[in-house]
Amino acid sequence: MILLALSDTHARRFEDLPEIVLRKIGESDLIVHAGDFDTYEFYSELRRSTSLKAVAGNSDDYEIIQELPETLTFDIEGFSIGVTHMPIFDDFSDLVYKAKELEVEIMIFGHTHRPFLKEIGGIVLLNPGSPTEPRYSPPSFAEIFVDDVVEIAVKGVGNEDIARFRISRRKNSNR
Image 1 (cartoon, one colour):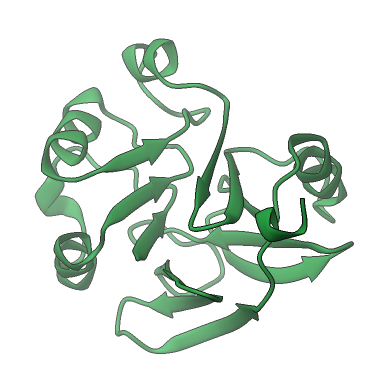
Image 2 (cartoon, helix red, strand yellow):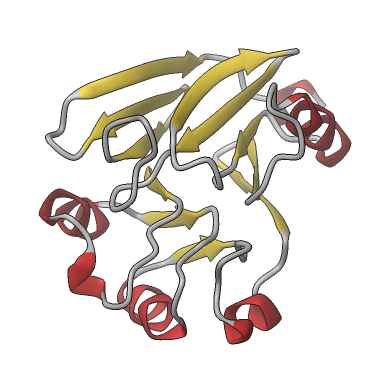
């Protein structure tokens, strides 16, 4: 299964996304969006075009904030994933605690507009960055390949690797 992780797209229309992101949406089984779609029009277009799991961000239209949760969890082939938009602390330690509270292995978040991929305290933290409005980083997104293992690739919009991580254990098989 292929997941495409996005955040901070701040788009008005579907066509505002970079060409590679539009292509990856078509190639993915599921889109995970960590908030800040910006407009309800864009959110609705994305939701109609693909399978979508998403949370609201702090810059989203009121209708999005009313419709989407602040935090979301789901399982994909035995791996548990959490999604939220905004970390509280600069070191992201709050996200580690939140992930442990939610009992997830991977925590996807946004808000900073900068890609981040690191394991901290046994939790993989992933910020796909922003494909449209990056801050002090290249425009980016992340692909998550799930099978017997999870492989995460943070990519720039030129399809270059920014970071990679691999998880070879299955959380749910340990229960």
